[in-house]
Length: 150
Image (tube, rainbow, N blue to C red; front, side):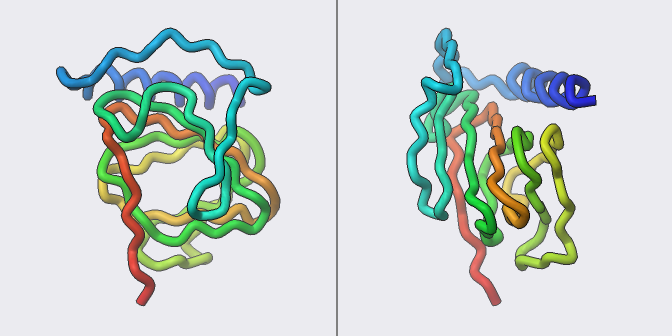
């Protein structure tokens, strides 16, 4: 089952790359990284991030991982580009909408996948412990726009 989920995520990421390639994008570089080579950097919301492929601030494909400490809540926000995210480890609670609503969240254990269409508000919570996710986008530049709480 885990292999099937990973294969599905890989196929979806490849389809995004093929269908949304832009003329301005630099081709991705040859990259081989083992986990012990990852350089994790702090994020503004309290987690950590490692860039793996490309640059989400430039046109083209990119991939990075985020590590959320236990109980970290990321308030509603959206991104300008479409993305596919995969839970690598832990269980992430994820919901769509402009308000952080625990009742709207779904528990996504390792191997789970979700999509983030452009400008789709969403929010997450590492409720049960540390979580690592991987995000793939094919049409950067990306960004993050917080949605004000009412």
